[in-house]
Picture 1 (cartoon, rainbow, N blue to C red):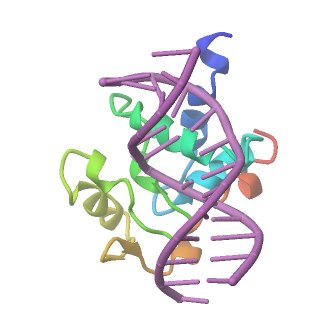
Picture 2: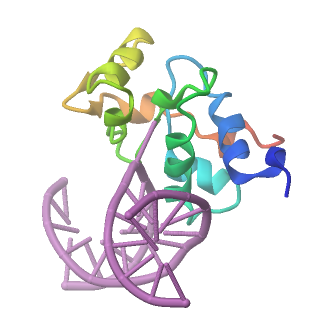
Length: 112
DNA sequence: ATTCTGACGTGGG
DNA sequence: CCCCACGCCAGAA
């Protein structure tokens, strides 16, 4: 299995499509990739995406809109700052109007 | 080889 | 709405 076809690479390619000011969830990505029960693997993939500067990992949160991965950004406030830079309001790790900012790949990337 | 641990999600109570 | 138990599966110890 080549690197290009690995699950991790597929995750990165989806994350790269998330527009500025939008967010999605680990589960939504897993479901879109055909493995609805592998949401934890999406989180694992993001953990390994640290060196990939073109993968906006801060736009991926859990299903409630909580910034569960903020501790992996070097600083506890980095993830929130990146999101607020894009116009997203975060209070106590919770994205406000989460559904309004939600970008579900299964809906926007049908042919991807 | 075996066990444990998650940047998760779902279902039941 | 909250809390808990379980399924998931790649890596690390």
